[in-house]
Amino acid sequence: MQLIIFGSPGVGKGTQAKILASKLGIAHISTGDILREAIKKESELGKKAKAIVEKGELVPDDIMGGIILEALMEDKCKNGFILDGFPRTIAQAKILDNIFATLYTEEPFIIKLNVDDSIIIDRLTNRLVCNKCGNIIGKNEYKEDYICHVCKSTNSYYKRKDDDEEVIKRRLKVYHETTAQVFNYYSDKSKVIEVDGTQSIEDVTSKILTTMNIN
Ligand code: AMP
Image (cartoon, rainbow, N blue to C red; front, side, top):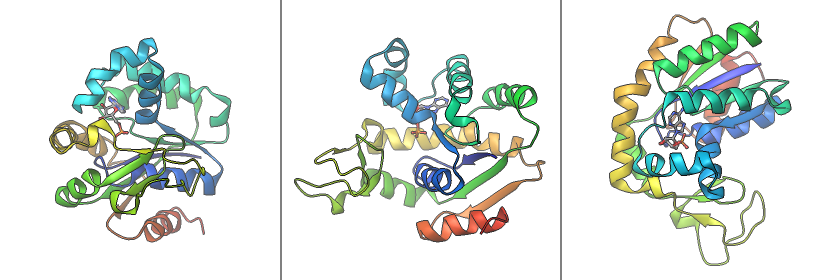
């Protein structure tokens, strides 16, 4: 089973992708996580991507195409996957079309989460991310010696550099100008699911799964 999850930055794609991957027994492929890991390790990819990611701009399509192909060839994707953060441009969608035409017989489910920009800005400026497992919490939940309830590490939560208000506005602009059109590119596909992302995490997951006919 293959899923692609769309929506603006901060809409809850990562949170839903993690839950869906675990419930469906498929891999969660987040291109943002892959890039952040490369930046942390200071690999060749990380060096190329650092300034771009920190400004909230898009890493070039040829680099992203290589990353996604490599990720999808991994063993963990054998039973399926959910893509979170890819494709973000029409060129990336075409790269993915070619990969699907070669490797898979089924069409992917296309999921889109909708939340207004004003709510997004508030969510992102107030979120912290676990450096070890990627779990997200609100700033007001954090206190000294905070233990991550998912991976149990202590004091691992940090604010992403691109969660600065100016960078968030830049990321939203890039989303509306470029990535939103990618969803339209898929609008004639049969397995498209649109969900109101302001509902609770549990309600969003349940709406997605019932629309997919999975209970
Ligand atoms: P995300 O965690 O999905 O919000 O991604 C964080 C940042 O990584 C984005 O703002 C981009 O700079 C970069 N990025 C992630 N995925 C892509 C992609 N498919 N194409 C280009 N840049 C990407």
